[in-house]
Image 1 (cartoon, helix red, strand yellow):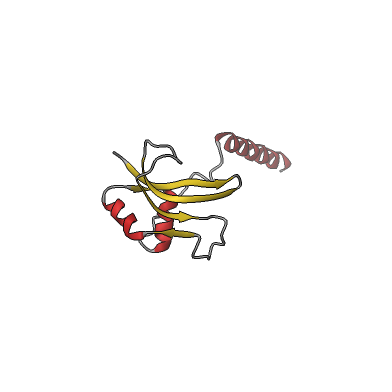
Image 2: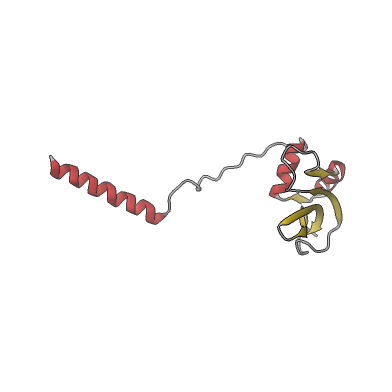
Length: 119
């Protein structure tokens, strides 16, 4: 059984409140879970201690058992100092797509041709 430490959403519409849970990966996001490990309230200010509460001992226990934290939970653990900070790189984010690069090449050719004609 593959276990993940993830967020389960609660709260009403536009007022989210999350539970940090250890759950089987086959269960739905807000469905059955194995253990509740903490809470996360994104509506509170970022510097508030009440924003993220978790039982770090139990989280470490589940990680030792082979549970994989999701990206958001991994960031919470990094902020708590439990896990070393992972390097994240999205190298393709700033690279233009195929059509944009083709248009840029065409513009460069036109500009080169125009400057050659002007001389």
